[in-house]
Amino acid sequence: MEKRIKRDIYTMQGFYLFVFFGIGSLFPLLSVYLSEVEKLNGYEIGIILSAGPVVMIFFQPIWGMIADMKNMHNRLLTLTTLITGITALGYLFFEGFLAFAFIATILAVFQSAIIPLSDSISLKYTSIAGVNYGNVRLFGSLGFGLAVFLMGKLSEYNTQVIFYAFFITLVIAAFFSSKMPREHAGEPGKLLGGLRELFGMKRFLVFLAVTFLIFGPNLANNFYFSLFIEDRGGTYTGIGIAFLIAVLSEIPFMRLAGAWISKIGLLQVAILASAISLVRWIFYFTEPPLALVYGSAVIQGFSLGLFIPAGLQYIREITPAQLTATAVTIYSAIGNGLGNWFFTFLGGILFEERSIYFVYLFFGIMSLIGVFLTLWLLKDHKKQTFNEV
Image (cartoon, rainbow, N blue to C red; front, side):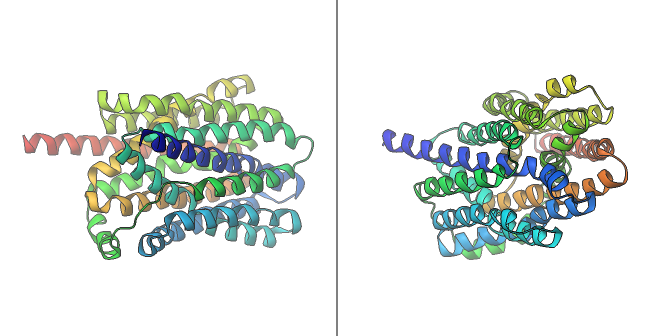
């Protein structure tokens, strides 16, 4: 039994490694490619980059419902991963703003299934097997960081390499997904009927707002950080180094998150992660020297490395057990979809009208609101606990 569990864990780790290697190969450098190679302006880049998050808002819940109703989580994950990789090659065969916007939209339709379906499978399996989910998910951070570093170097010779790398690694990831442990569906009626109950929960709605305000800027940063590094005088290789530092720093904090949560509490860890994100964005607004930007990249480990596991665990804690899958799907749609779209789109406008530094000022202001909302949740939680006692 233990041998089979180890094999399944290695399979899921391999999937996360290659999927996020592909994501790290393409998206952090896509804005630079569209700006420098295709000569698109800030408005056009903002629309193209925000197409994906908009699509995810609607399609992430749909993919989850289809998977549960048809009991085809693994097959759907394999199919969508493969199609996503193939679709990205369209950037090489077509040109122009409209063509790129169409490709970005189609790519996002299928990509939107990958994270929630794989998270659903891995969260459920690790819970049953008694394995730390963070030890599986951290391979995604590893793959992302390695990809940006390597692609940053290779892109200096040929920028088109980012599309080939995305295609190859997602094909490999599709193979791993076909070997992942099977997830069995629940009852469709419970999935659909639980929506009303979830949206009637005040704490759930407030934490969705926190996720929007904190996770959204962090995801949008994947697109704009390369432009920020470039404006500070960095090269493609420098962009890769900065992303490598930022993403790999998430790994130790994902390992530590469980212990910190047990010691100081879920919401306390979320507040800490949110406050650190706020400090990072305001620091970037001050136009710091390039050397300090590289050094500060480790801050991402504190913020995302803590917020990702704390956020998921909080959602699971405050929602009924039979609605956890639905809650996680909605949580993903708000953070990965709505928040990502909003901050990426508005970031494109601010980048065009003002500068990359005002993009980060905007991120900081929104993160400050997220910190206050999390503090309110903590106060409400303590009040409720006091009343129960």
